[in-house]
Image 1 (cartoon, helix red, strand yellow):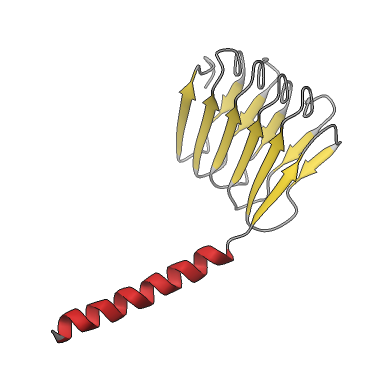
Image 2 (tube, helix red, strand yellow):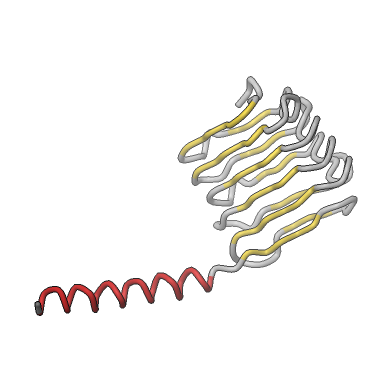
Length: 151
């Protein structure tokens, strides 16, 4: 009975600490569209959204993740991230989601993974065509959908 009571108290304490720690992790959200720089400025996870057609064209836009934190880039507009180079090598976990036609298409579109888990999600059959992914620093890499040959 005492052992069960002590175990319950320890579990309650650990659960409370986990909930408090989880609540303190911030996520910065950036809506990137035709801006010159879409750069994560705050410590914590960063989610960058490129939802407009040609909105994050790499010839006009620079995307940078915050060092030592997770980063997600959502390319949901047609050709929204074409020619975009995402250098997330100083980030931890990196996820790129290419969900529209030609969203991340092109040999000049590239993702450099960070030091943690890295994933690429190519949800349209042409969304990641010819894209280049550098995984040499990543702990692991996973590609879902119709993946580019250079991933």
